[in-house]
Length: 347
Image (cartoon, rainbow, N blue to C red; front, side, top):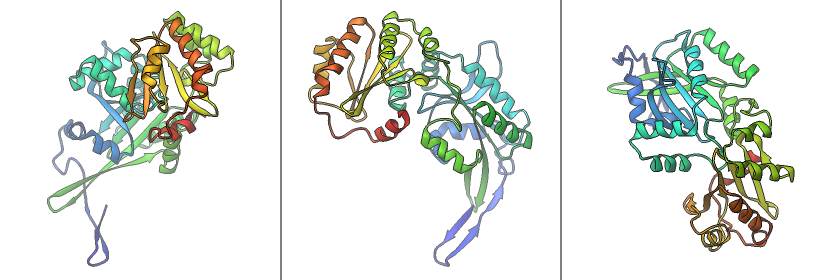
């Protein structure tokens, strides 16, 4: 790391130090600092993550624990493993954890968030919904691994590359480094695999480093996991009618005119509806069109709307609106800040 000396128009190299040489010798020193300032650390990594646990047991019968567990904005669970020094088993341990948490249902993830943050179930659901991107779909459709260490064995890096390029796993290796100036210490976290240019491209697309294998081979398999027959019937009907869709997230898209205005994401017991832009008196409109107790909620600073549907009558009301009134209604010209990225991602 270089310090800028504006007065002398020069760059001054800072002294490097290891964590152990600086007295950060306890196993949880780095982990505790991340726990106390997760947003700052994740920003240094150029990641947007919601931390939901530390020292997490991936399965009830396994004693070893995940250092840090997070969720990214696409709904993937992110296993974060920390090592002060290089370790050949770093990746193997993380792979084992990722395979175990891949079996977690949404309820287990929300429960973990509740325990970690001391929230009610409603508060945890609210925080998760606000964090995820609009087209995130179901939680834990895929998993990611982030390894953090002062250095990496060659075996770890070449295995990460092979698993990424051949099998489509999302594995990233970040090197941490400590620099010292007088009484101040500076920590940097640099992604050394994959190369930064590839990483940035992958983040812009919102997916892994290559098109990953989705959780379902086809829509029949995806709908087989849904317990609500009304949801299954609705999706089958819409798919047979050629509705625009995204299998990986179990999403249907609906347009008003040429613009995509809604998406409907399948859940185990209902569907989650996102309205990209508002229209006049839309909350009252949905209450009159579907049912009075519909859980409509303004989100994204009031620029968007969301609600859930679960019965055949709900779906009938929604389709009546989509095929009629909503094709002529005037939507707001102002949408959420990340709407354009979501449109590109779903295209």
